[in-house]
Length: 335
Image (cartoon, rainbow, N blue to C red; front, side, top):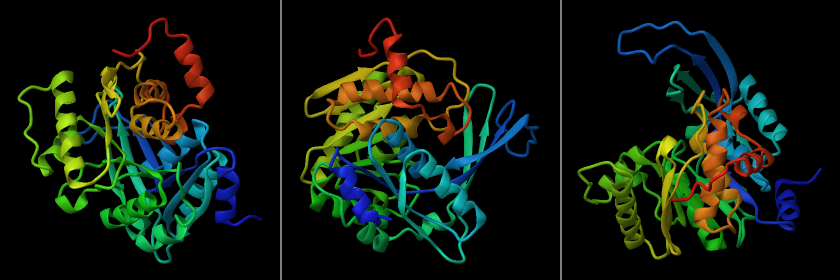
């Protein structure tokens, strides 16, 4: 049986490898007619358990998009740990970079999804909070030039920064999905190549960087705010940074060294939006060699297809399904 590092070398012989450093959760999803208000009780129509966590979802999305993908994360010493590892492995994700923490619970997430496909999520970090720089040092030893590191904010910011530093020194590309939104300056990761946020996360990040907020919230204003925020990140670092801000059903805007633009999302009937953003991030990481606008068109279509299905990681589509969807779209989605 190959070691984790031998497995990485074999994957790299064919194409760039995606390493996802982040959270692994056991999700329980309840379908409800509406999200409860404070003090309100609502009755669920169904419940479903599945693997989740932003890290695990993004790793599965990257694998579904066709990239050799390895998950680096932490689980507890409970029954859910084996279930999560098996679920990742079944979706083609390398799992030897996952460490077990004694006397800890595997991360948990309670997801409520209403009839409008909106969601509300409560997360218990569990073992995710124990993912530290020592794991980054050990499990990212083989990351190299042309590979991709994906980060999110469901593990400690210190661990994220350590992972980004290792990847940067190795010549890898660092993708930071700043979600959940950072709340303090020490939550920021500056050594990045691609920033991915939604509108709320962008506003919070801009505020932390001292970027003036626009008075309106149209797509053009969001694009300008994204550009200013990227400039602030570049000012604090020494490398070019591309960025994407998702707009939900309205698609996404992007800023890159090659220019900026907007990609419209395919029109679909949404059922559950839980893993849409994670799907987009995984697809962006998996197709690094495409120009950002083209990559975002593919990733946006993958996210749109995901929202037509129930569940978190279970909703993430295979590349062939996304390509079929784009082929059936009469007009291109770029604007």
